[in-house]
Length: 444
Image (cartoon, rainbow, N blue to C red; front, side, top):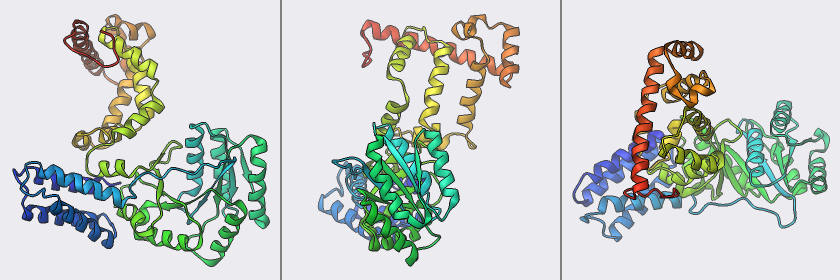
């Protein structure tokens, strides 16, 4: 979502870092660019003014001007100011001392409440929780069907309520949850196309009956300043404990998502990052600030790897690579692991200093297509051919090309690249064994 903002801020700080000393005029120029970039991204004017004033005051107060490391210090000050604007520390989800923990999702129709209910259930189940989903959006039958479908996909039970007894049925479902072995209840409530008195009264009744530990307002990050206004309106009537910002993977300006915490005072707790069931993550202000400033997000990348990559398999494959025993079978297994972690471009952006490379990748998801092409070639090989590429004579290469929808020249190119990689890794492995290169986690 913040690609354009990130590009502009990165360009601003690159100009600043290209100077031997940062003068007050340099600082003023950089802050002017920062102000314009944030306003163009649809960040609230009041929030932008406060952030720029904070950065200027700290830069002058800490005497970074004329300092050799002044440019780096200015970036650090902007980073810290962004983190403060986004809420400072991460706000964890509440957990009841006596189960079940009740999480109520509220918001306008179309904000993504129902999808968020499924994603949240999936996320918390990975943490050892046992969720129960409650479909309480009785005014939109499609929402009930959608939640049932998500529950079936996740293998989780879904309880529906009656239109004439929504609050009572929600309370009954919560009361029966523990007896059925559930320590978490996620309730999807009804929304409207706009805020009205009837909707608020209904949700207030459900809140009173459910006594939730978390009342999360689901907000469409593409809604701009309307998202800020709706958050303020909901907060005035309901005990909102946190925000869920959905559609954070969109191409919209999305600056309202940056200022919503500062304007509403409600902490952001979760981000919806894609339509997939694993497309949700806990919100960390410092990590988002790092992404915006082009500094990567290595912690989120590591968490994704820990979630999707088999550590024992990765260690075994690394050892085989260094001993030149790495085969196409191993390479194929690695491709499957990488695909689980998300689009290649997104992964590159999380690596410090790799943002520019991600931007230079070919248009139209060419990198993803390249991976799929390689995957198709390897999938068209027999197990014996994957283990020993020397078996691939002319006729076998023609068969693989026909089976993978590629050409023989593409097969030849992949085999050449793989042989070169094996040769390089054998050299690295030799250096590691001789002690000239120490690789953490691998024996000498």
